[in-house]
Structures are given as structure tokens and as C-alpha cells.
Length: 230
Image (cartoon, rainbow, N blue to C red; front, side, top):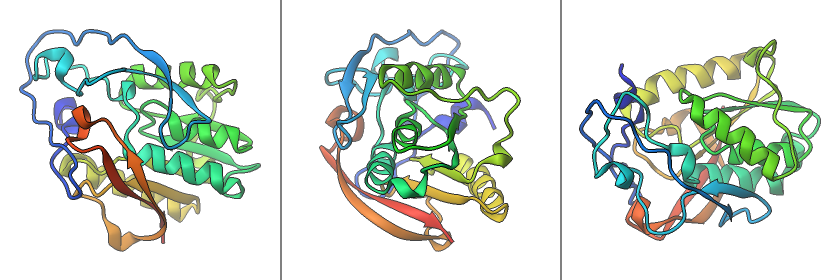
């Protein structure tokens, strides 16, 4: 499975925008970002692309390298919903070790840190996303724990925002989250109906109408659920 396949956002339900770029062998320009409050969780500000910019606009509508496009420069609906839920229900993370899978901008991880988690770590296939999450955490006056010497298996809570966007990703992600649940960790997922979400494995705990950039999703809001793995 290539990185292009891992990061390709297929069209799902609920108006989620597809992105099927053609891989070529040039570098993705590093985006210029501004510190912007998260629409659904304005307690958190992130370094994000500002203005009517889509995921592949920086590359002329194509994916130009083996590097992932900058998913971390946007705050996706699933991450926003998950962050809002954690901030509104701090008891799910307070005093616990939390791991944020496919962290992107780090919005869910930052929410967990603000809500009183004992320690928060992040992971992502893109090292730039992990760096962005730490940079965003510092901008919000919280710290993410270093992953060195820390096992994901120690997490008592696992967060995953907007991770079921393609069949290539959904299978491995489902297996990873089920493994975490068997440990057992509490597994919470934010999903706006991307199309590959295995709903049968989850129970819904909240729904939010999430503001999103029209240039990114071809709509201005997405109804987004927060789900707990059974």
C-alpha cells in the first residue's frame, strides 16, 4: 500500500469531498499557515491554512511526490467533533494516558491535554503531522509527551479523528483500534460519514454540526458523530 493510497480521500456519505490526485515525482510545497481558532472548539487555536484553499490546491490539483499532502494544515470534521466531545466530557480522559492516532493537526490530542489527561502522545504516517501537533500544542500552552520510550499499548484512551476515508486505510485502522480495545483501552472515533466507517463496531455517543471549509469539503457543514468502540 503506497502513501498515495493511504492518503487518498474517497467520496463517502454526507457530502465528504473525494480527492483522487495523480502521483508524480515532485515535492509538495510547505504551506504557509496562520494561528486560527478551531470553529467547533474555539478554545483551541491551530496553525492552519487560511482562506479558500483545498487539500491539493497547492499542487495544482495533483499529488506530486511520495510525501503525503499536508492533511495537518486543515482541521477535519472528525477531529473537531472529537475535540469538542473531549472538552465537554473531560472525565473520559482526565488522569489517563491518551494516544491520538493519525493525529493530523493534533486537535484531539490538544483537547485531551486541556481536559486533564495524565499524558498524551500522538502518531501519524506523516512526520510533518507529528511535528505540527507538537507545534500546535505549544501554541495552546500544553505539552504532548515524547513517544520515545513510551508504548502505545500503555494508552488507556485511544482517539482517532476522521480516519476511515478510504478502503486502503479503513482495514488496517479497524484492526489497530480493535487491538487497542482488547487491551482494553477506551476507543473514541470522530467520523463525518466518510463511507468506510465500520459502524457495527461502535455505538454513537454524540453528534455535532461541524463548520468546514467549502473549498475542502464542497459544503459548509458536516454532521459528524463521535463513536465509542464496543
